Image (cartoon, rainbow, N blue to C red; front, side, top):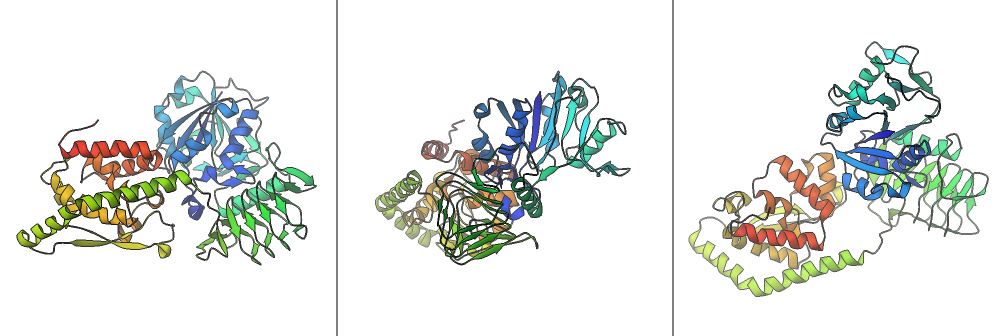
Length: 505
């Protein structure tokens, strides 16, 4: 049997979390929610999966891999519009499937059992929560899960939204037939839903999930390598993840979930709350009915989120990434060396422009220094200057792909100053102002803020100075997934080829 998991990754009810995590990778107790979904379906005998992704797809693919760790086969399909993920089904060839297709969701999981169901039926089987039934003549509430014969897709799905797909499936289910009532469902599409899902698992009200921790006492799960101070108080149910340190006088529970690699300082209290992996909770801090994702605090009752600037209150525990630090130092050293060698050319260019060009020699823009947090109030800026009033002018003579030597003397060489100062790198994404970043769509903005600005960009090499919005988005998304020493060298080579009007494709 084939399972098609719809996992676009964006939920309006999880906006603050989606800036860092696609919804299926939001943790439920000790592992990302999508892992629970996969393991649950593997238990049902399904080993062939297709995932429909949109927001931060590279993270999803990196985590899930090819499926071999679960003895399964995983394939991935991308959709640009996360609100219309079902449009992607048209290109999958599902109508050629001989057996049934299970439509599943990456942010919901009903307690279903495929055993005993008629898998040869030509009618869809929709899974509905008990008591939901039909809301009105236009549609019905459903779990987002359905068992559908391959022939159902012969005409293709309607136009891509979940509401339209629900109408089509429920319309094909005769009243009283093929409508399977489900008593329980884990639903993480909102902060309250995420909290309720944790409570349901801790209370053992949703059977069939794997948990990595050892249940030391009834309702108290402690994972390996946990350092628990003798004066700490645990009130069940409580779950503590791997490599976590709990300080003296700390109270955990009831209904407290602490992710792996966390530190809870002395005197802190966590009640009815979820602490995401890699978070630090400060001394004597009392948390109740909240979700903590490093320095992001979400009040579940009010649905509000704030970013804590003081790392001694809430913060993240950053692992040391030596290769990344060395790469950053290498870029800065290279910029400093090139600046020392070519500094005279920059001065001569400035002198030439002073004599022969009207207007100012230098043009400045206040751009945001990235990577940066999602909260605009925490952004740092620097004065980015070049000899160009507009980037597009540099490519006017060079055409769309041949960048021209004006690009080198008027933009690239002056930018070496910022590389030497550690504000930019040789290769990265184009620097943007605060206003330009705020105008980006949410998913694009989150992707951009995690990147590093550079002189040479993926979009510049492959699309020139005037890429359309789709080309620019795809270039920056691709670079965020592929960024590394080898890929940067490839872009440097492509940049040199474009200067001479040659292509590298």
